[in-house]
Image (cartoon, protein in one colour):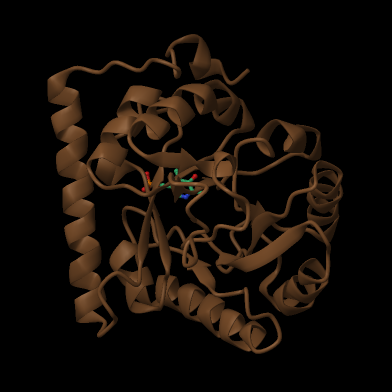
Length: 278
Ligand SMILES: *Cc1c(COP(=O)(O)O)cnc(C)c1O
């Protein structure tokens, strides 16, 4: 168990009005910021999806974000996925959304699979934090896409367990564009080869690439990493048509990432405020 889970009931569903208003304002500001950045970059309105990074937030806080317009959520830790899924799934269904794996399999960000027999609108649930192989079975019943795949062996383990369950799981290849030691992600020089090997596996569908921006103040350095991820995606796309997403950009570098072609921004602090726990 993660230590802060002893101090905060992440399954809590009720928050006060003031907190709900803060979160609503946060979502609206971020959506406005995305629209501005799309326009400044000459990109089509709606081409960037907001993923709310919900680590340390409880079910009530997450539902306030969904009520304000968030349509994709991302968790870092399998334990948090496990604790929150039941409440989130039920409250999403009340609002007409099928959360994560509760949605019909095969739904992606750009092609939601809904039909007459399944009237709920899919609301994708991503895992964005490191995944140890002994936790794969904890997240597979809940998530639609695992963004933090950075080795062939992890992809193979996810694929094997997905095949056993008769499902296909979306994955993004995480690339460590900044080269910072503290970050996970594969070596950029290995990304193309690794992506091809992952795309060939049964049980997973390679949906794109993910990176965390360099932790520096020099914008040119941050941009270079994002631009390299985009070039890698462009090179892969000819052979792997499903490889279209670029998950890059967080609270502090969202506009830069959108200017460099991001299709998914992962935002926590700008929606929910500073985290009380790490
Ligand atoms: C926490 C987290 C985010 C969001 O970070 P903020 O700075 O709070 O917007 C995005 N991506 C990953 C992988 C994270 O762990």
